[in-house]
Image (tube, rainbow, N blue to C red; front, top):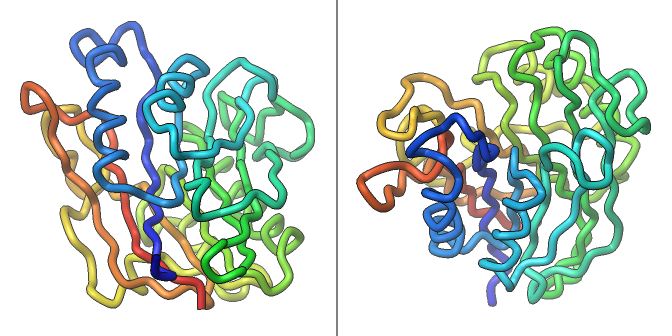
Length: 266
């Protein structure tokens, strides 16, 4: 096994009873098949509820999972879980914090967000190389512009606290495109001690696929690449792409596409 591995971020959409033909029971196989076929060694999901996460655990037995739900930190609400290949990585440490002015308080709301938002992070050891690194996964507010801006700052601050010189990988649905304030805070070299870059800008082979990561289940929503992979300078990026896999009846498995990057810890 080489030192390269794949990182995926994927908003699988929560099980909304009003989704009609796009409800979870009709598309869950497509979500699991997409992950299985693309074979990420490191996976950050957004929006699964407890029963959705249970299904994916059953369908993807090679992964170990970490993360707490956003409402109570126990079982209620959406998760932003991290999954990792248990044959490749060992878990060293994990925790969850809330994107709010009280990050340690479960369920706390941040700024103008209507729902709690979280960051799940893990510290992993690569069995192939012995390298230790941090992976953080998140889902920023869709309805709170102030919350997105403050969340970006808090994320940078927390990463500085969590790491010394370890490589860092950040995945998530940030509800912002490149050039907007939260994205620019994340990649601002002066916003924290650990500089981050968007993997799309670091990719040796450029970008594959559309310039969006959002769908309406049947069509692409143009110019809405709001799902990102960020890396520190000590993470090499060979490939970056948006995966537009279809499944039964020519539909997409979610209202987001997975974003995939092939990386190596330097």
